[in-house]
Image (cartoon, rainbow, N blue to C red; front, side, top):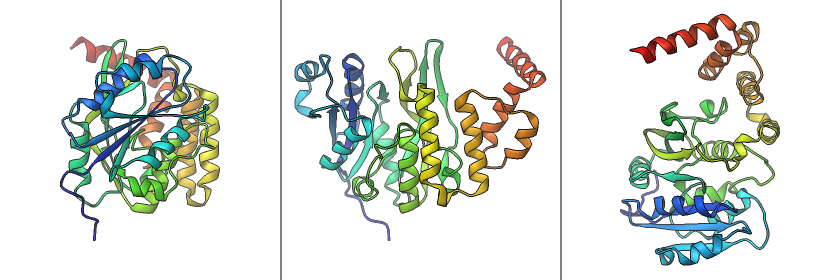
Length: 297
């Protein structure tokens, strides 16, 4: 029997930050203006040396958020884990300090999670780029462990039960990257299938110059290697093939036709096919031609 949620459960939102005071204010405001009122926002300051503390103190809604400061830098995972340990909500989700919630995100996630059959729920993502917004609607619907072991189909934030996130030990600070992927795999392993909504309610801003971990190729590749080692007992050959496709994409490497035929499977076709097209000159030229014809219409 699924555990019954209260009618209006308290949702905790963890928001780790370090030296991004200006961007942080946008993230905070996007949480505090949600249409779901039963929330607590936990900002964990990872020993910032900028004016983060002063801006928090001066925020008009200071009384509506909890501000926790780390005594020394410990990284985003340690900051998230502190918020998870201190959270008062029955449910929990997260936000990066350079991202934002769209209005209605919490109520939308909650409506699906309240069905009682999902370990966690995520949404599609809107990317804000210098050229305009791009909505990424991929892998929507039910996502089980088999699907997750090919690549991270859930994205960087989910809504789940706080107790479940504590049960699996939160985020792993030993991983230099892909900590979200590792956490969701452990959560789905422990609590069953997840769900990804078609509606985009999370914004990732690609129009600023401050670095993301996902932009550090060395760290991401090291993180992938550690992820594979950590979950090796769960990974079948088809999963390892998919993770090799992912490694090549992250490393900026090619996927020639022979390697494509050797590595492709039902679980990685969405990632392998674009890599093949960009590797093969004839296919890449055809892709550009089709893109030009599409824009001309």
